[in-house]
Length: 376
Image 1 (cartoon, rainbow, N blue to C red):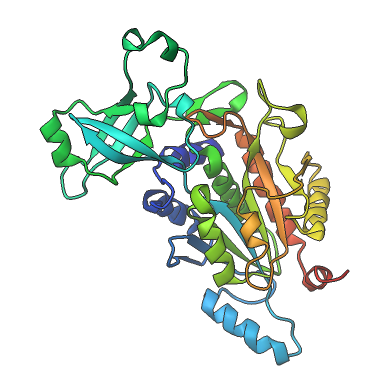
Image 2: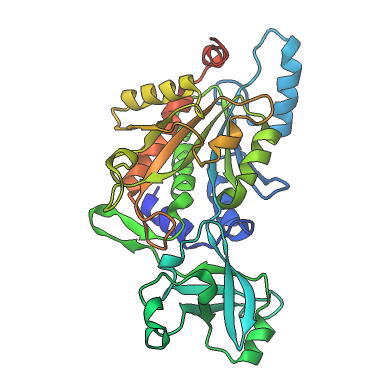
């Protein structure tokens, strides 16, 4: 697998929170190369199922669920399932109004207004017209026309607009309130193999799950693997909430990004980009899941620093852990720099290491481990 090429493709595909269809199609096509079944649930989560190689032949998820129910009274233990959850949505903008041909915007997710001015964007206009995607630029009042006290202030979202180069009449014909706006950004190759681009939070983790699925083609594993690219994490953790409830896995690992070391980041809250994935430790993570991931990293001789997280991790793990009757959950982090900007920076090596760690962890799962999750 060409991890860098995959990262570029995932980064450059649109998938704003709540409107993930474009990126979902790419992910399902990629995961379909390694899984016997792929599907989309009612909320829009992308799901791929790879059955365990030591328990049974490939079956659909519904068939596996039925087998699991019937096995309660059977001598043979039920087939266990682990969910790998990585959110596929990205932050973006939405058309909030049109004034004299210029487009006013509102934010979808944690958009930082400080980095918007001067950015190139794509306005995804009305779908019933040809050439619906309009290139545009984010602009504001020239500094020469601002009052002296306003020139050194951060320009708020309400004072920014998008210019697509059309007349007022043409804009109203092609754009309406509620249309989506994504960043127009080609991933840039930096030195030392790093990549900078948009949406690596959390497409880097989607790529790590893809690496894991590829690695599992050559490994025996007892547990079924259910990979889920969740929707609407950037707004309210909604996709993970419904997916975890609907799938009811026996355990789960959430894969997300974490803060990479850069100018201005506290040393105890950031991790070296290129230094390997992090393993979350704290009340949001089951201690035995955490320890097993540490053990897997040790077997691979792979650097995976612990990331202490004392409360809400701000990830899908927060809702997965308490879905249904509760799901033992682990958390893996991929360090990126400049989070929630169009130039998030990631190391493909970290993505590959995270994928290998996931595969090694899964290969070691058995019934004994499952029983240990409920022990005191």
